Length: 340
Image (cartoon, rainbow, N blue to C red; front, side, top):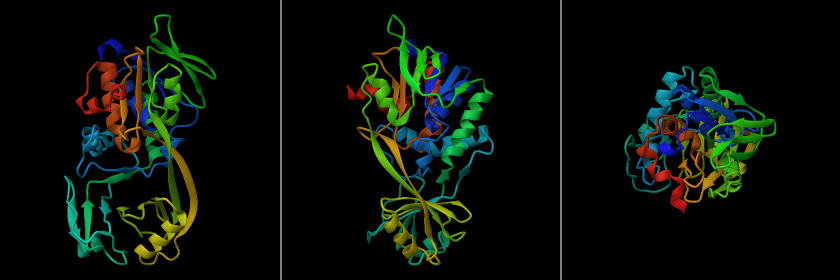
């Protein structure tokens, strides 16, 4: 890792992951330039359901990251007061007859308890999984706070500035990026550009196996207090985002409306306000791709599904690797070289 460490970073992408890397790296003393084709969080970050949870059974290469996700948001909230995070807990159930298993941080509750957690349920499920430590964030609001935090620590921020290429010097090392407004220099480039990461890597002969995946998000008008927690069922993920506003992550607006109306009392007036179809980056094995690219000294990749959930943790750990030269164990299963 040390061979590619530099305190002079260009972070490509001001979504929540790139903003988190920039903020944490600037806090650690790096010289940081953050560049994005649009505004902070305006890409797929804005289309995220943004459920934050570390509860449950976690397996796979990113298990360590998922385990610390909630604690990292509590830490970030202490560092950036006013961070828009709501710790409501989550309530999940499906149509199976038998009680599910509870993972760490979870409790199996009966129908009576489910009805106290979500009082407007028409028919509380016989069993549900209650995760009191879960929450949700305003993903654009968090991204904007991270960018402001990076700026406050000296980062240079270039918005509405598309990156057209990654620059290399005569020895093949990273030298910065080319943008529509001219070159930006940096000895390390972090690609945190979501679905655009693959094309930027390909221009260097680097394969980043990320495909675009559609991410529908529905905004609903609903009676105040209809939903109190993050509700997860086979029909939808649902949560409140304002006094009379809900968002739902699901497949069909018509089926979602019908399901919400049949699940909750006094929901007959719930109506669809808007539909957003985001394009999220989906790695080939669904796991985050985070780490240095050995064949291009100075190039570092940070792209993932569940970016909002993992952003607080990933930003801190990536900054430690790039600024301090550490090798973070929680990132060990996420390296780009696993695809070679």
